[in-house]
Amino acid sequence: MILPTILVENARTQGRRPAVLDGDGILTWGDFSNRVARAAGLLRALGLRRGERFAVLMRNSFRQAELLWAGYWSGIVPVPVNWRLSPGEIADILEDAECRLIAAEEEFLQVLESPALSAWRVLKVETSGGRRLDYEDLLGATAPVPVEPALEDDDAILLYTGGTTGRSKGVRLSHRNILSNAWQIGLASDIRSTDVYSHVAPMFHAADLHGTMAFLMGCSHVYLPQFTPAAAAACIERHRVTVAHWVPTMIKMFSESADVACHDLSSLRMLFYGSSPMPVEWVRAVCALFPGVELYHCYGLTETSPLLTILDPASLRGCVESGNTSLLRSAGRPLPGVELRIAGDDGRWLPSGVAGEIVVRGANVSKGYLKRDSENAEVFREGWFHTGDLGRLDEEGYLFLVDRKKDMIITGGENVYPSEVETVLYRHPGVSEAAVIGVPDERYGEALVAVIVPNAGVTLTADEIVDHCRAHIGGYKIPRRIVFVDVLPRTAVGKVQKAVLRETYGASGEPGRPV
Image (cartoon, rainbow, N blue to C red; front, side, top):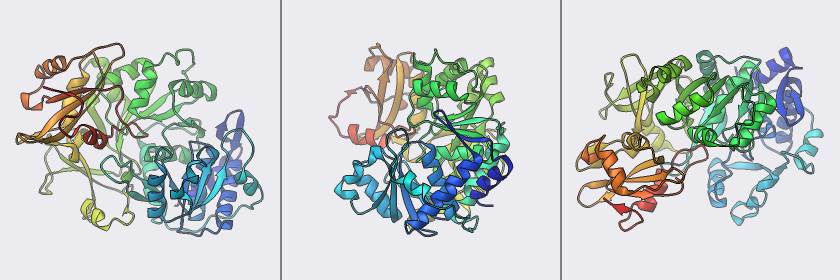
């Protein structure tokens, strides 16, 4: 089975049911499938052929969705691009992927006028209001084409990683990868064909692939161009959204916003969250905000299409109600069909309770990175994908994330996991956000630096933070320097950009108070 089979079947069996809710308009499954078939024909008319690639530079919208599905339909591989990148970074991706075309909405046309991007053809797409641009004119004049025959292991999409540990890599995901994960998520959750699924995570990020499960089930879809608490709340109320997938920073913003209380959020029944660990205090806040909602904590990566584990709602809410928060720190158990083990530095499997590298295999695991032979050989070994994440499994099979392997700090010969220190920092009532990094140190090899965002209206001191840490963790884990900032640099899906922090605070004499 390949991805466009989903649309063909949905159009055949429920062609008059709503597929897309957009403003006051509705596209049925018959409408949406027809538009995708026309968009596939348009890509061919523009000279693209099966196996070639085209870029998409757009905010979340049903038109971006139909272009991605048109790629699946035609065998022409879509490459969604992070619109927050600089022109030079975008050009690097287009060059690496050998894209022959950029489909871009009007908002980003000025970016494409940069000399770095002048070599690529552009298909202009209007996504909301205003005058109709080339895309709709061309789509209306193009006949629908049949699905291009393809193999399950053919590339369906090329997604670029966030680059939090270096230059972005193009991850090749096949029809089999994405469909397998959709089935796995469906088996582990309570998704229904009557649900309304809101696409909130940026569609250039693997987190949005979670929504493939909702396509598979025949749900209706709503697209939020950009997240704000007010916009998300209004979307839930207007379209009676029942299922959403957010990242922890979105949840924190939503729970602290004064703009959501006036909206009726009662339709929401399932909220998935993931992409980065969430402090226990934030979990409690979202449980209080959505008392009747099923919460699913997810863990995954771009390379796994995207999910590997889920902590089920009963376990999660039971922890909150009982006061036993230990399981709240868990990312749950592996999805059906996912094999997950913990490996030591020597490659041997480690027993429960011992931290090591998370290693996985399954039909949802990518075939590898584009043009990265050495990295492929390093992380895809003997059928297993070595994630670069550190974790441990308890005796019941629950996964607990420890940290990124590359983020582990060795100070004075001792291993320190930043997440452990960050967990302690979050217990301080005056700390809103925190990130811990390692920087070069002549005496200890590496020294810990804590970068902290205080709560609004709160003044913190370095001594206060150090005293708090000293009460909870060993001396070698206490940050040697405390830096107070207004915001932490984050990726589009809320992951802290620790490489940026290391670059900013890694040199001696940079802002911050030594302890």
